[in-house]
Length: 292
Picture 1 (cartoon, helix red, strand yellow):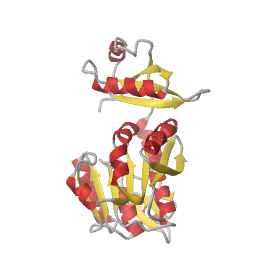
Picture 2: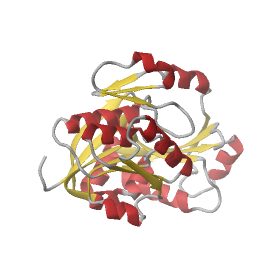
Picture 3: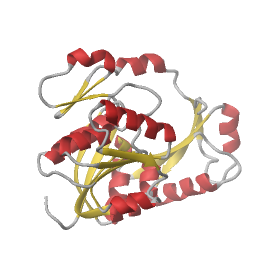
Picture 4: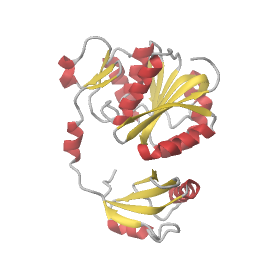
């Protein structure tokens, strides 16, 4: 994807108005930003700010003609040394019973627990990111209470969550991703980490795949993606849970927690906990019924 160099920030509004504007932006044929985020901001009342990302100032300026964006403010994206930033985070990571490391750190594996070797590469999810680590901590908490039998990792990336769940719960895990490369990487990592027969990975867009339905309903679902897709998938994810089933969501900034929590509560799920790592949040929900 082209690097974002300019942002267009829209004045804050109530959630209903901000969400409606985002829907219109995503459907408009006149321009296509690289990304759109909707973030809750500190205020005496809950207000939401929309930020659009563009490759150039000219593209951002053109967007100002769209109804609802005229009062937006354009600003350059701060320069960052992304290579240095990515390398700084590649030391081994501990998340409860799970210890994640790259192939260059095999000699640092600890005794006990579950060690997983995941190298950075062509798919997302090495465990170093706050969202992945948050999901692993949530899984560790869950495994202290129960052992889920049917598990789905939606948007599996490198497969780290699926592999951790398969190893930790001793069960079969369905792992899907829209990207064929992610599925290829997941299969390789599963074999490397002793879960070849336990992680069943295939390409699927969202939940619209008969194999996903056939393996459900699920006792545990991971969805470590992004806020907007999580909203779009909320009804389907809630329905895919078995009674008492648990849902671990991430890919969220701290500012997006209340938005996503409100959406999933409206789908009948109970918020059981949250984990914050840096600026990232992981939310844990449960469907009513069942035990555990």
